[in-house]
Length: 234
Image (cartoon, rainbow, N blue to C red):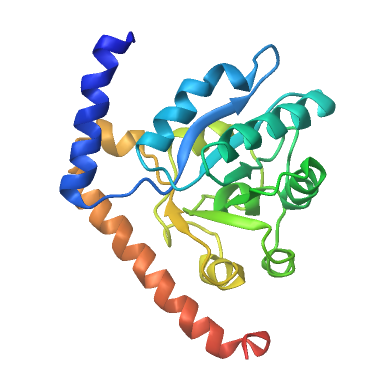
């Protein structure tokens, strides 16, 4: 889209955010890929900063480990130029497949504004455990995404479900109450709940989001209860 058509839409979006008191907690859509230079997306960095994004997230998908890390370092630097922290999102069966790999990757980058994004579906389906999450060093977890999943392991059709069909929190098999308790205090949490089936079925969007928020609120209340029950929460 050319700038003359893009600018009015940006202004409309900014006004809508202001009118409804909504903030952009996470700017997504950045991917490190073979043959692409993340610096070519610099206009998107500017857009995210203009919209007031609080952090930017990237998926590192280049199979070349050296280039993957180099591009991530550039990503973090471009964000730092705009006073934005960044997160790296790991996914099973990708070059950064699990929590341990993501923590190591961010550490190797030496980017002072970088941390790891923990998506509940990716975390459990890559073999992660809540004890592992609880033991991540301070400052290494920068954001969490909450959803459920139909099974807690990698499976055929995984990425299609991850993109298009995730159960609402509490409607799958993941131990989300303990997951929330294992996150560091004050960790920002967002919902990642795409559902193409609901959209095609004509489910009312407001009703769907209300159901999702109610489910998340219930889990957050359970987090407090779990904290009182777990010995290491004293």
